[in-house]
Image 1 (cartoon, each protein chain N blue to C red):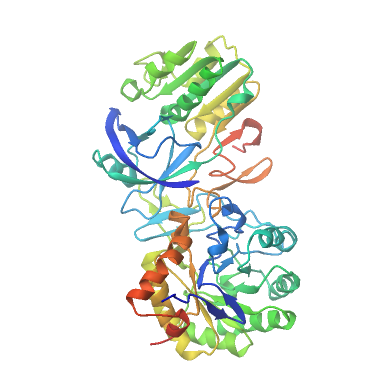
Image 2 (cartoon, rainbow over the protein chains, first blue to last red):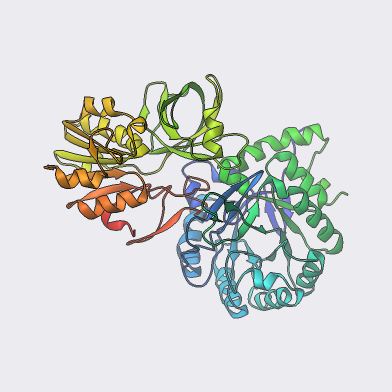
Length: 304
Length: 242
């Protein structure tokens, strides 16, 4: 029997639930020559701020057991280049869901950036990043309290009339369910969870942190069970759709994340060690579905 | 960029802490470097391509960390998952007639691939290769077969000129229209300071994806932010902010 991989996410139909996570796939264009992007259910673009940013000094990357730490620090060309150049260029070659990942250093900046993304024809969904651990005074600062996460959500919802708005949450909090509920109450159309875990490594020979920024965000297979738990908890507390993210590295992980409550699934760190991870996972999904007696992926969302 | 599987043909110690890894199976590679998966490490490790052949490629590496020590223990026949065709290499065409190659330690490895290209183009090559001591010297005979002149420097004076490559460069009568350098950052900075005229240097940085989409290795250049893995690793002398 032909397997149905399609899902409905915030009013969009995705051919399959697999989406490269923000920051692990550039603006899609970087990989256009290496693979057929159109096999991807969606692409979450690199996090974007109002002004162009260089990001943090190098080294920005540290290897770990079952994962890695990054402290890229939102290097991006700014929202105007995103909506005027990057998205139109990607739209020409890609038919799936284009997800703009928006960051900011103030509620006002989030609002301005989201308004521009909402007005951009090529963008299908807006993912608001209140969880980047790598910038000071922005990102994570808004995602660690229910009150400020709700404030950002309400502000961007005021200006987003065309596109669904998902809030991307941080796992670096005491109670992610409380923050998820606050975002839902403030009008979020969906949630992405989770972003990276605040972490560090030390170069013991030089007696210095490996990362120039000292701290960064940890991701990779090691966080999968924790991310899965958070998706499960939030899915049982909220009624809006979830993009599950965190340590997903195989088709089996995608299925497990969906059973926990995810409608779509983002793949992050795995892309860095295998740029072909997403197409390979999508290719592998039908055989895993066959083995688990699944005809349509829609049937397993939040089934436990 | 292509993901390929090669088999280890040889993996042998050729100098102090220095190994030659010959991979074969899926044909020659393009690009300046390859990204090797070394289980159980999560991220791949980047290595400059030293030589290519009909069946594969040769890499030189030093055991400087856990990843390279694990690599050194892998026997002949081991399958290696390799991303190939990465990075922008030296521009051999930028040299008109005479090239100067300046290597520090294993910086000699990618310069050897360049020397083969330049030699094929009929260009005159002078190579200055610096090492800490005699037992670290690599590729000397290989360079001598391709170059008009090869000068070796060692810090302890055990072989060739005693001192840094810059000491040799200042002592030699140099005739070149373009220079190329690869080695430690501090060495390349000194080389670019001492040498007049146009040139290129190959930089090194901790990488994530190695293919230009994670922005983990972005450096500031005089022309703005550039990714070492994709826009480099080779940059023009005037682009580099030391």
